[in-house]
Image (cartoon, rainbow, N blue to C red; front, side):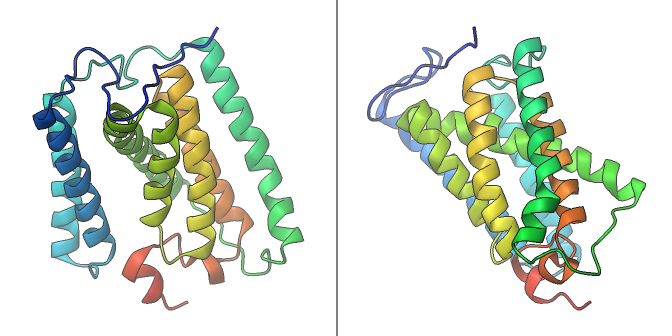
Amino acid sequence: MASESKSFPGILPYSESVNAQGSSVWSLCVQIVLIYGLIVFDSWTPEGRLKAALMMGTAGLVLLLAVAGRYSGKEMGLGIPPLRGSLIIIGLGLLIAIGLPGVASLAGLRYPPVRIVPWRGAWQYAVWSLMQQFALQSFFYLRLESLFGSRRAVYIAAVLFASVHLPSPVLTVATLLGGFFFCEMFRRYRTILPLGVVHAILGLAIAASFSDRLLHHMRVGIGYLAFRS
């Protein structure tokens, strides 16, 4: 049986490791707003040294706050992935990925030139996918869960995840639906690695299924608007 996380009404902690005092609540809120703001700022910063520095700095801050936080490695999904949960997550992810070309075709969004992702870009995206899942689940979801309960946190985290993919129409819709799936699977099984694998599979499937005229090389923010084919 899947390990279900606790759900509390109102502003209550996920586990006893996080107290419900006002200082803890405000600390979590500040952390969420700070990291979300940095991610949005980075996505709307033109390519260059500043953008690279922002990306590296934000990633480092997420890691620092996660390590310094009161959540255990198990709560952050860093333990050994459960076999049953992993099979369910990866199996569902593969089914969705297989159906994406058909969805794109039915929607009239699969027309040449469809982008083929090279191997080097594929494995780099796989690493990036795992990093995104760590930020989404081990950072944002856990803190939102502590504030609002596990079920509400699924919806809030999914909306935040989708919002940082604006203004790309395909990626915004895909990450909203994907965010619900990722967060719900994390809520049930507390594991990161299978989610990172599925994130990579779905991202590459989207890149291969939808025209680059819409995806703009999977860019978001100012990069999407500044894209020239």
